[in-house]
Picture 1 (cartoon, one colour):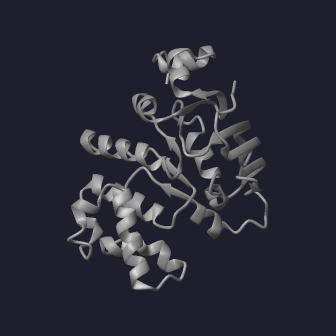
Picture 2: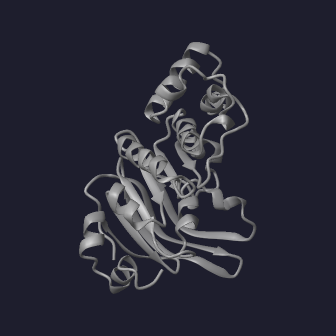
Length: 257
């Protein structure tokens, strides 16, 4: 049961299926992920949430014996085409993982890392991008006087915001968040959640979370997944207050999961 969102889709999936060897992990998913909104993927462990998320920047390509059928459109471009430049795709579709993974470099070098890879050398451009990304990640005021400090000395919550700054410094159109607060304390989690609601003004966010309260707090749309299929996709308020599927209702009321 899916519906069309009220805004243009940033990502469109048409009949997407995925296999790891003989095991089918995703089943015939058709989904429209709206632009500049937060879409949450929820469901029990092993239901395919992270596998689906990793399709959006072709990270499943590195898994041996992984086979994918169907279409994923980023705007109007099919990113599943063999001719797709994966480096260019991953600049456009950034990703933040469960545990913060800053590089063992300075705060500054972490943020501008992607720009340097693109060949940007102008110090003024790098400085402006660094400040802009750190401000967008709600971290600038905390680190502006210690940009030369090793990023590994930051707290876990600060490190996760730094990783977000690194991801958005190259100005992607989509940001994928794979359980970005599961390793953080409640206060850091709240900061990241507030940050997500700010970032959607500029980026499309897709969030995998095992925390249904988080999904209900921050997302505009929610897809409930079960056994590799999208059971239901709708506005978050409707999913949590009047789901159309009994399986969705059973999951969000805690009958299983």
